[in-house]
Length: 400
Image (tube, rainbow, N blue to C red; front, side):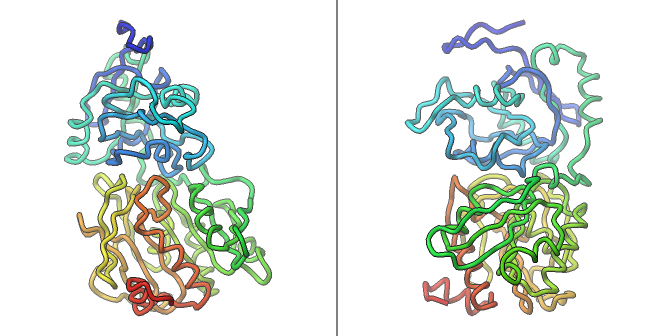
């Protein structure tokens, strides 16, 4: 039965959210009407929903926003992190009646509808978030309109038949199919190859601001294609964030090992951090419900500095926190750790020029505490060093 028109004149249809453990939440349609399947995850950010929705790392995930009021700043043409919305679905409690930002060019719900993103609103997202924290991220379906009228056992079967995130190889699905170049701003200092595993647009922009010409290559690129960039090869290689299980990324891990063998300076973010961990011989594992949001405290273990950071990851590296590990590429250790749960948030190699972080120093919506990590990449390409002493100098504001 259709609900009466809202104050904006929009008529919402009944909607149902079905979790794979059988729990259900009834609400109203939000965005496109229909059905969608994915992994239910929650994001704790109170702002930046446009950046979240367009982050390719959310491919095949249904995002539950823990902030109750969503859509008040609308959507614009500047803040997207990619060319489209990648989230499989969107769950909110209280959608804004209208956009009220001078930067908005259209309403969020119109954007969701235009891109075919099925969502649900008017449900208790606090109860849903608590359930996911207690039971873990799981498969979910959102059904609205005629789809919501189907028998619940039939909907639950559809949810349970959907592929799980563990074991999924997804980077190639979101990667660029053709190489492209983001030119350096001002004087060009370096040439970097960025492997697009689900890269966000802000990443090459922040590199370009530091005089780096960024060559973005598809996830399927070979070592020969990487080394063909620049005169005599690139000055550095970067692996981006992206979706899926790092245990499935054998091709990308093989490429990274070739980069480490060649001693090309390497920097990785998020999925790139997990792949560096596996290249060094560490394992990875799926977190119970992951880290997603823009308010996660991380400590740099060399300096003791605590950064408030943006996260979006459901997998993590399994590496010892308090010892230096011997790896096929020399010594390596955990450089950053999450203060909420001691999850590994960064790795650094002590004998080859390579480091990575699990969180997002490129977070366009903020916070920007960790933007210095791009300056560290510049230092690494300049000196070949990423030592504790260098990091201590950075913490004191002294030029390396």
